[in-house]
Image (cartoon, rainbow, N blue to C red; front, side, top):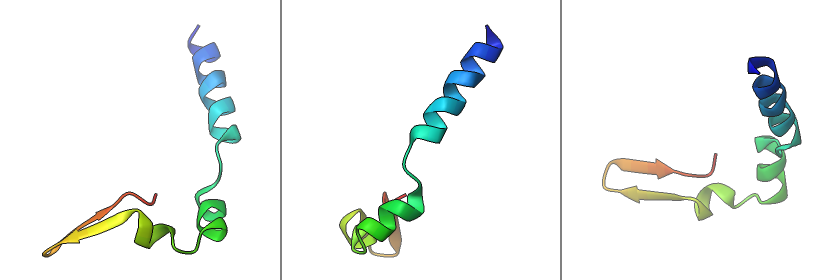
Length: 46
């Protein structure tokens, strides 16, 4: 069973888009998915 779970996780990881592709498709991704509150930066772009 453990191998089946790891195989499924691997398949999902392979099917997920690469982060570089997401940034290439939307150069403003960081600006859209981040916020600054004083000195604290929240980055949800990744």
